[in-house]
Length: 160
Image: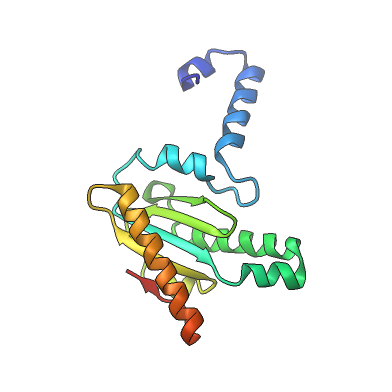
């Protein structure tokens, strides 16, 4: 892999092509967020305080009833809502890591996050030393949230 310095020394059209290839490798083409590979590359670049795992509720139902184009539109709407909650790039990294699963590493946990993102089941965990352990805990909490919502018809909450 070339460094940015090495890329900048190449002819402009080749440098632009390489940058585009890098972007394609790390960015989810549907949402414009990082993909899993991009997330894994960036997660260790800064000191994050919170891991937040979000799973879109009822996407399968939308796909089955209205088609995959409607499901894709719902995923894009969810990604836009996540962007609005974590506006500054320096404060969070946002990624779509699966069909309807997203992860955010952030320096803060927004107030009323569940109310701002009602289409998601959400789990959060404070990152102490191990980012992957915090992500696993947030993922477990997200599934607990999803189970409670399905069992009780509860509104969105954050399991933290």
